[in-house]
Length: 273
Image 1 (cartoon, one colour):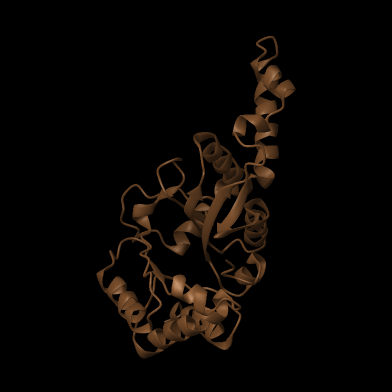
Image 2 (spheres, rainbow, N blue to C red):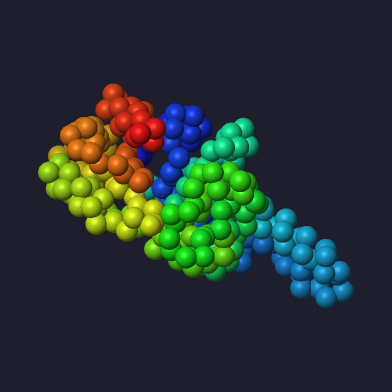
């Protein structure tokens, strides 16, 4: 289930600015109501306590619950997202001119309260660095200079309308190739760029997706050996043999072989042309 081996700080320091994030709720005791102690619940419901104290307890409880509540998920559960978000924020504090895009692709087993907690976690981490969505769907004027002038460093893509400062999926399409064929992927990437809306963000997914046959044939292997080496070579060939200028390009296992390093170098050089 691993798709990256380097931690987020290493990725940031070497040029990665877009992160595909998929989360699952870590329900150790089942329903979310069970995570709040009976004493805390009684305190919150007690009308004799000042509203300010009740609100403070709610905030403290929310922070405590969200610490380990949201886990990275890609087939198997990974580490809590809180530490990852904090590492990104630390990098942004040290590099005020940098901008990252956090794309919450999938949220599994989320209820309304979980969404509220996740929104609180994101906003408590990044605060005013979060860039609100544009008034229109035309992003032409949303330049890096504009973001720097406004102090915005984080764009949050969210799978459905939930919070006024998060961008909806329509502003950042990310079509999935769902293939293990190099020729199909090459055509898919080229057609995607040709037909994309130029006034929105667009993700080119240069990834292979294993099927049952892949798993059976590579029982004692891993995703990197079974799919990624061939896929990254396909992506690099596509970049070098065409004049493609991806808006956002994603690959698996960055910085793990010569091809993945070459892909990142190629994209960075495109920014200076």
